[in-house]
Length: 217
Picture (cartoon, rainbow, N blue to C red):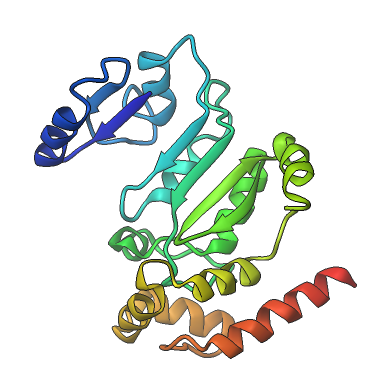
C-alpha cells in the first residue's frame, strides 16, 4: 500500500503509526495533477508490479479535481474508489463550483462526482459524505451477493445519508450553508432559483421519490 501526507506533523504521526508495516510506502508530498507526485506517478513509483485494489482521496477541497486526473491512465484501476465529497452542496447541482469555492472543503456536487465516475468506468454505490464507487465491471458480483445494488440517483443516496446522519451530517451541513458562501449561493440560485440554507428531510424524501419515478418512466 501507499500512504501520502503533505503536512509535516501529520506525516510524522503517520510514520509512527506505520512503523511496523514496512510493506506500506509512506510518501511526504502534496498530490498534484501530473508528474511524479500525481496519483498515477505515485503508483508507478511505489507499486509498479501490483494492482491497486482501493484508492482513497481526502484532500479537503479538490478531491474531484484529483479524481479527474485518472482519465486516460492505465495503471490505476482500483476496484473501489472513496473520494471525499461532503454534503454542503445540493447533490443535484449540475454546474461546477469555482476552484476558489471548492477548495474550501466545499467540494463539487454528488451529481458531478457520479458523472465523473461514469467517465472513469465506475458506479457510485454509496454516499457517506464520501462518494464511494465500485468499478462497473464488478457490479454484477455485488448485485448477486447483496441482492441488487444497481445505480441509484444522487437524491436517493443523499437522502439515505441524511437518515443515517453520518458524523452529525445534518447539523454540520446546516451550519455551513447558513454561512451563505457566495460561490455556493450564486451557483444554486442560478440553477434552482433558490438557495435553501437548512436541510428538510421531508423535502429530500419527496425529491428522492420523484427522481426514482422519473427514472422508471
